[in-house]
Image 1: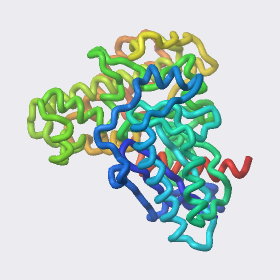
Image 2 (image 1 turned 120 degrees about the vertical axis):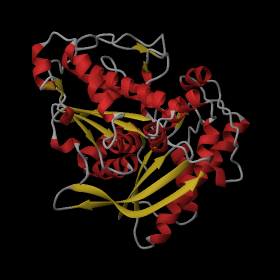
Image 3 (image 1 turned 30 degrees about the vertical axis):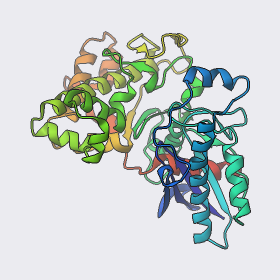
Length: 392
């Protein structure tokens, strides 16, 4: 058997071989990776427009009526995934593949398909169709792919069970991963806790609305940071991609005094600090309406929960957002700005226990915030989930 973790993103399917150390009980990625871009397939529609999300959500509860465009676009997604799996099978002809698979979007009731997806096609028979294709190619799976997981949950699993993970060192921590989108994960009282299971008292980052009216995802994801810079600079995101101007390059421009980049980094610093502050306060003492919701119809959060009185020992920042914060430590931007804003926020609270825990020498204790070195966390978590599922 060989463990394969697969992460489906906005533009590609990426698979990694996952190694398990029987002595430590921990997992890591090998250097074996296969990626397939959707745009490399003939059925791919570059200007694909998804069905209105309200219609998608309505049809989730009844019957999903795929459009011709959705069906065609889904062929690119499904064939890309099948080709990734086939590639690993060819590399390991005498081994069966144990596969974990993560994809964005709301899942079907059996957790094997995608019933709603903001920026892509619905694929209600996603895993079934992939398995049919690879079976026809003679690929042997160790077992059927059990379910489609969440990127955010898989980031948490990676941080808990990986040799490079940071959850395993603490009992209570929050994880914010900033890649193409944003991922939230939580560990409380020594156990991983999914945001879906605690959504009655805490919201996901993308659900929270900044003072400027934008989702917090805009300030914590790589694509969102590009968008913020695009607004300030007047340069379209497509042109930024063509010129290879991503978050790290935007930080470098800010260091050089570029006004649009400085405005962008200032906004990111302020909003991320306020997000971290909200997480600390909400876990410790319940929801205090620090943010409004992107969806005004979102159900109100409960002010109390079973973990009241808990201090978050660590805030872990991962993926490209973690890289950006780490890079900023050699500058006066972002990292220092986040600390300064958190220091200001904690000066305004009355709870002396909170201040004692998080404020050192009059400033927010920077040691609470840690950056993760864990690469490709969602794919790693997918592989871990598949393996641990065998033990249940």
